[in-house]
Image (cartoon, rainbow, N blue to C red; front, side, top):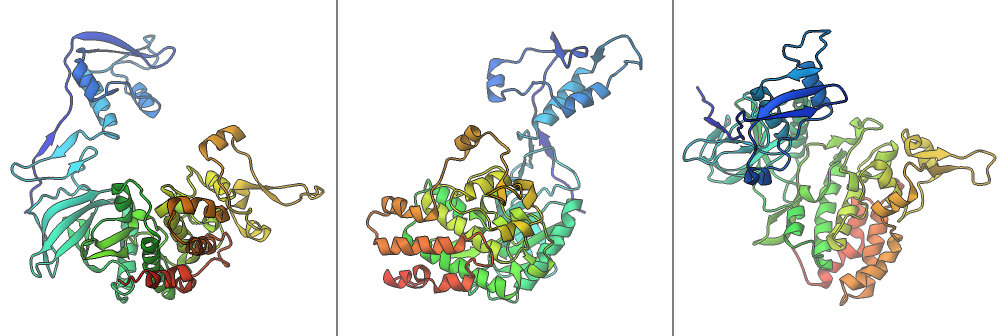
Length: 464
């Protein structure tokens, strides 16, 4: 029988000493006592003892202890311990106050209060067992909303692998099953030739789904962060683009959309032995084209294709748009389309493109969310972008950009020693990948045949 490790909950304590009235509104207040916090503690955790607002204030009002209904008293008296508990729990939403520990072993640090059933407490040197293999946990690579990723040793094959351990959430069960079904479908492809992460198996450990993948090196996002966003060379960009185009060509041939391309989901295989070899990972949102519901939202916001925003039919072309955005970030040091909402995304896209065609807007089921039609009697009858925000505010948040053709003025500054013809080829490639109309956008095959991708590596004498 498995036993959970001991839990050490680290939190700040207080004792009654000072009386303080905290106002919750014009008529209601809470009386409590507390010890004055020492300055060092306040510096370490600023704002820790600020009373909760909004929903949490309403919750406090509902918890009136000893206040009878219809009472004339407007004061609510809550035990000090309960106040402290609610303060700490609210702080845990943004700060980590809880660690799981067992003497002599490194454990996972949680960013919230642990749940005894849904949080899997995995320790180094613990063994995860499937029906065919045993995996020794060696270290922790990271933790996200989905769960944890660990570095493990397959005790049977002596191969180092990455094991993705998913959280046990009811709402996530369907998504987990869909991801496994997608990985099983991709298993028919050659992961090395198609530049897709190799998946070995999945199993259940203490009620948590575990997925076993080949061990890769570092993500493109982390790689760029480590070099402080210094632009990659034209050769490096070409080689990476070629490999991702091969991956998307394989997905397109099988009628699949990745739907979540970004720097985090592009991994270097082994920087020491194969410096520019990359693979596509994370198929948690991948979906067959035939099963995409009209109007469904995909992709991280800065990489989101216009047809997704407008509610047009979605195809594999959305991955090509995302790829174009990724490529630009490799020399621009920033997103091509920085934004915080779909509306802002459309605004910045329209600073490098003409507005979407009337044909696209007429067919988009969400076009009316962001565009409005002018009066039929108007000489400029048609669609125009709504003005949700004041013009000065939007200009401050999203500075004007020039059309993609104007990159020719920027690229010589980034690559002063490169031939202008090569820079023009790169711009031509980007314009083809970032075409608003998905039917006119480049396909993976078009990318592989483009001179920037097909000829540049040979020009530099490079081969993978």
